[in-house]
Image (cartoon, rainbow, N blue to C red):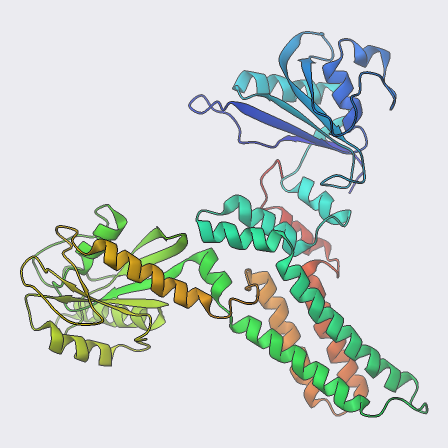
Length: 459
């Protein structure tokens, strides 16, 4: 940090189409209250300002003020002003806010007026949050939670981001650091004082600590809930040609995303659409019809369909009610890798042409929409079951975390096999350093630049 005062628009930039009712301009730094006085008192800039200027309201008390151009004295807008005294602020510095009307002309004039004072500069993307991190107001996982909350598109993404912003991952990783430091302390004692009478069983305590830490990190690495929430739960629609897979995709997407034709084998490649399914982000994939074919292009489509089904989180098998769907059901399930009877769904389509009966199926007419509510309910239940696995612990959310934890996991594995106690201690230090990089306990300037540059300007 360079100690300067920064400012930025903390709400979306108003446009001609969307001017907005209100806009908020935020300031952070030692001169933030001073800027507030110069903007809200006519000619205040000419006479100067002290920390006890009577024009400065009580901290944390919002007041109605007219905003003036500090040089010309011309009124710009009438709104609300408030300032906050350090260190009890979001960034840990002096802060101020102006709540103004949301028109483009008002916001533009206000920002220009602040810039003309020459006392502060426009904030870089993520600089407010970075200053909060630098002043110990939050750690890196909590900062990333703020970014995820701003970017959240579904209800479940919002919940996960809020959980991370509130420190769920921070507490988990700090618990691991505490366990690791305690174990390392025993090792250091054994190395530094080999002739002392140390507690009996210290070697077993060290090993148990390393084993526990490695096991907990390993379980966390296997938990894919966070990645699924960020990228979407992948659902593959599979089945024989002409069963109505593309029609089902269009029905769920509520648009013509895939070509529908009476000609079998129309779909040759995987077609994806992104949906919000009961608050869960979902990537729905329509695939080529599964059958034997002499056409080389269709064969490649079938290969891709089987690969997508095997790699998907969930599968929806679509069968044709007007055909021999019961025999096809067993054959296709048997040939589908990773089929899960508890979560995967069998849909019997075209019930407007032929009635069907059976358990563990969802009767559907993609043409009329009959059975769609039941299918949506089954899909939401299946996704919920998938995402409940390991739900007692906060999920792993970012590739940066995964990379550091893989490094820590590998170091702990080496520690368990190390022939010398000094090597065990060194590997444990490397593991703790990797964990510390996630929360920011180990400061790496390049890492901070990567994390905060993806924030929006006013954050």
